[in-house]
Image (cartoon, rainbow, N blue to C red; front, top):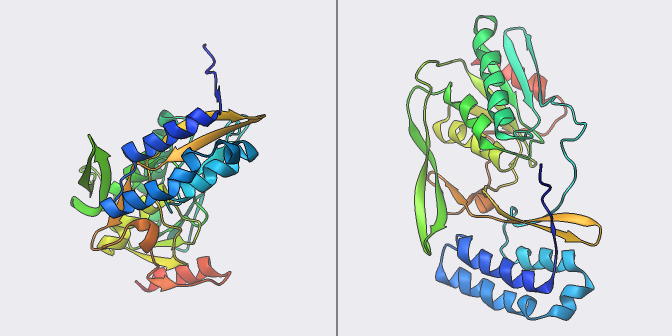
Length: 287
């Protein structure tokens, strides 16, 4: 198998990153784009500042977008030697409790398998519970494919929960994010979702249909805010391997006039105490 060679970061790459931002980042207005270009000029022309601290330099450039998905990630061998453990669950007193730690996996097949695992868990135990608690606190996202598969079984009909803005052929395009219900399965029990300020990205895509439709009650604290489908560059800086992420999506929840980065997702019930799981169970049993 051919090993991918990661390019050493050079100053010329800064201009390539800058051009890619202008090409794929969905600036919502001409003014927003011009403001970025004006502020970014000192970066794309300042090789001295680049050489001083390359990673910090790129972080500041991406920071001009004011988007929590526009970031530098230090690459690690994330999946080597790691457990496949991604969720835990229990059924007690008529409540199915599922803690989902991540939507990320080593590859797409694993993402799909995990989504199906969660569906099977809900379907095969349907006679043993009268309500579900999804606990996604601390879940920073991953792939939305598995999350979408799971979500679909809790809705009877298709509907639009959000709108995605992206740039195609130089134009800003608005597309609906439509939930497609599962034609073969529907589970209609009451649902509570536990959220916090670390819920991000695909986790927020999972939460949003439940929030917009009021299909579930959200308990906890406001989410972090962000959905990106990022374009990525891989570079080597000294001994570090980094990933430069440029968002290509900006998501608006249905009914909102500002992107998710600004609105975030607010709980229906704000709750910050340590006994949040027991609180959620007691709340669910009253529904």
